[in-house]
Image (cartoon, rainbow, N blue to C red):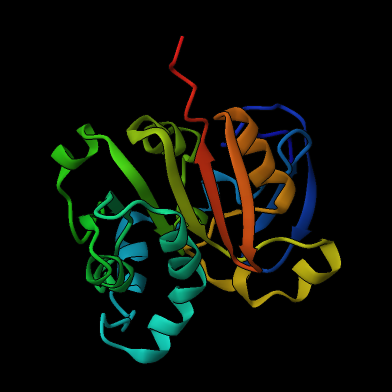
Length: 219
């Protein structure tokens, strides 16, 4: 397969990382994103049909426990009454409910389930994306939009499972979800933090907090 520009950093150099009966997986030589070529993405209707099968509920104790791996450390860092956006909230925005219960003002955006484009024109103290970034077909554009909404000193909280190496990837159930088209490693997320002038903390195996430089626009 010829080189396909990386959808995150645009680099032209990539290598075959894995292949299975469904898809090919390339790895970028610059940002280290592992990605599925766009020609192998599901149609938007097929993708939505899979999302509609999800049964995450806002009051599900198990789901809340899962989300607490990001919610707890994020709340420790937020000022009281911070304003935030749950980007890609899906049909059961449990994390937004948890943060709202903690006293923060959280708006909901999802291109399928909460399509409120006016919310994308605002600025926020924090943005959360839980089990979202692996679905980004055009991650460069999505992250440009997200960081454009994040105030200096603001926090971006991510949850996504991370690539370790090729051997682990070959056995990984996470890649078998056909709606997952981009797979991030610590290297990839560190590249992203550098790109947008952020500090980065890996607060759990699948939870990451980036903080935008509060002095970024001081000049």
